[in-house]
Image (spheres, one colour):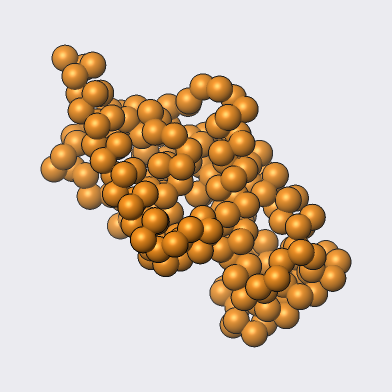
Length: 192
C-alpha cells in the first residue's frame, strides 16, 4: 500500500460518527472515506515505528483489514481514531515480533516534515547514531515516542489510543525518553 498523496479534509464529528456507523453496518464506501482521511498519518506512524516503507505498508494494511473486521464491535463510535491507532500500534508490534530483528531507520525519512523535526541538535549531532539508538527500543517505547513527538498527540489522546490511564501514558513516555537517552549513550560509547 502506498501512502495517499493528499489527506482529505477532516470531517465534523457528527459526519465522522455517521460514516463510522455506516461502515460498521458494512458500507465499504463509508469505510474507504474514513481511511482516506487517515491513511497518510497511519502510514507515517507505522514507518516511524517499524523503520521502513515495506513493513509500514504491511502493518498499515493489516491494521485497516483488522479495523474493517472489528468495526461492527466498536462501541464508542466517537473514539474511532484512537481505536484505529491502537489497532495500528498493535499491528506494528506484531511486525516487530514477527521479524525477530530490528531494522535501522532513517530519521531523515521518518522526520522529513520540516518544522516537525525533533529538536535534538544540541544533544545529538549524528542522526545515524540517533537512528541506531531508536532502533534499540522496543515497539512500546517507539510507539509512545512517535505518537507524542512525531504526531504531536497529547498524553490524553495517547492514553486513549493505547487503552491506558493518562498517568500511565505519562510514565511510559518518561520511561521511553530515558530508554532513548540510555541507548544514545550506549551508541556513543560504541562509536568510541
